[in-house]
Length: 88
Image 1: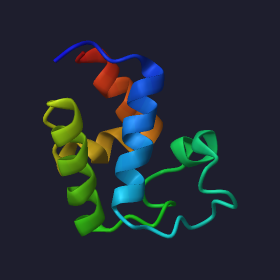
Image 2: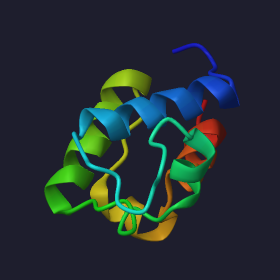
Image 3: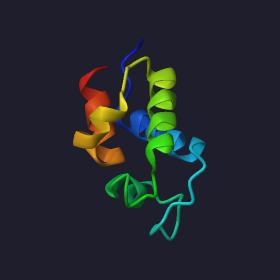
């Protein structure tokens, strides 16, 4: 896998959120990536199934294993981007 830039990783994470089909609670404009990235997964309306789907989408796109348990410590999409950046 080639290294990904922070912007590309942000896009990958944002697209994975969209793939989960969530109606983003508390986000006025879902295309406002910065607002979405700053919210916790709980604030965004993720449930356990959404978290699993999100992890699978990230792993498929990046080749980096991300398990649901790790999301308990990462808590936000922005933290996931940082986690991924350290592994590319």
